Length: 274
Image (tube, rainbow, N blue to C red; front, side):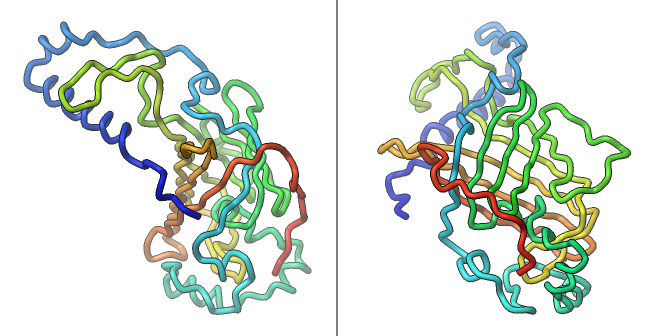
């Protein structure tokens, strides 16, 4: 896959430069800046209305790295790149897929901490103005992102846990950045990315071969989308798994998805232990 034509920086970096410039001016001369650039009114749009990009539709995973860990099930003990601590390595080396199957735990590698790394298709849609749903055909899983939501205290742990979502690094709708030398001029519209924090997880695997994460693990994700000049839409999901029980450091991955024109190829399948 050729990303040579994709501009990952450009306008976003210019926007960041503008915001840094304005913050310095605000610190130095707040009254002058306030008079010249009045603060826009609060944004009352719903999260769905405020979406900086369109996630609705079908997406397919494009596996460009870690192929042998994602496309096939690695052997027991084969987990380089995962910062497992001594306890995590010991647990991983006891992996027994037949035992998982017999106990009804064949979905342990399909939890929120691992699901976005699988070779799969996604179906993303809005449930309502504050709730986004992500379905996967791998393992037939459903993730629900709650904007402004708070994890219920009495919720039972689940493979997909509870996901609180928010749009980040976003200007209010209709707000126009002032012209600043070197910024490329004023630009109307919105930018931003989706941040998702998932907790209340049922213990599972980071990889199919039994590398564990525990019930107290936190999954922090960043969803960003862009279009190439030819019109292809891409979704980049950066996942940070933090688990003091089984990991020495946070486990960070970046997964790529390309938008599909329709539901062709959508094929929900059950979880497999191996």
